[in-house]
Image (cartoon, rainbow over all chains, first blue to last red; front, side, top):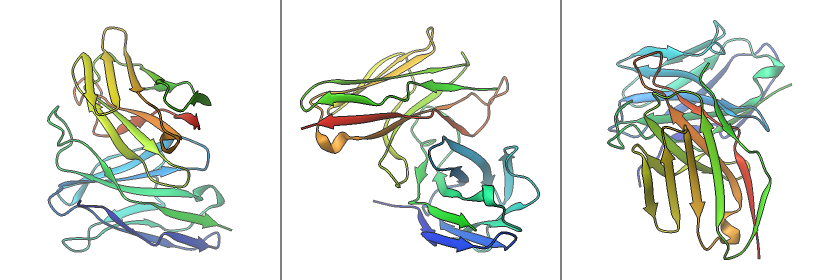
Amino acid sequence: EPEVTQTPSHQVTQMGQEVILRCVPISNHLYFYWYRQILGQKVEFLVSFYNNEISEKSEIFDDQFSVERPDGSNFTLKIRSTKLEDSAMYFCASSEAYFGPSGANVLTFGAGSRLTVL
Amino acid sequence: QKEVEQNSGPLSVPEGAIASLNCTYSDRVSQSFFWYRQYSGKSPELIMSIYSNGDKEDGRFTAQLNKASQYVSLLIRDSQPSDSATYLCAVKFAPFQGGSEKLVFGKGTKLTVNP
């Protein structure tokens, strides 16, 4: 079963430090996403990425956040200067397509990276 | 603002019973509907997707969609203790008329199946 791989599984950082979370999407998928889930709260959309550029971002995804696909396999989320409120589980997801009733728009999630900001 | 609402529960059912989970959404032009299961500390795992009005069955799971009522539900038959988890309803709103690529999640319903 193809899977989305995320590293690290848990990162602890000091407030103000930069963090990079890494993801390897499923190989034939074209759409990549980052979501986050603060403990006890909803899963929230951060950003979607297609054809080497951001296709959509939420209001959460401010200038402190950036995404990159530095090579053909990795997809990264960078937080430039972490805040306490960035502590959350960050999920990477990928899909073959983004829309349509065919099932190709189904998102597969990685296991998540837990970020703790002290 | 596109919204997805779920009763947060907890919902407690005995082993072997039918668990019924409900979800309402705010936008009539929503196209794709998903149920994910999330164990504590884990990532969402897809259970069912449904796109057309009516029922869709997959093993012990049945998803029901009523677009006129803006309502989607998940039935779990013969509930097992291993089904104990939080069930997330997620909706993808249509790209036209203000929709987008993103999934909008409800807060989830916590289900406990008692042996």
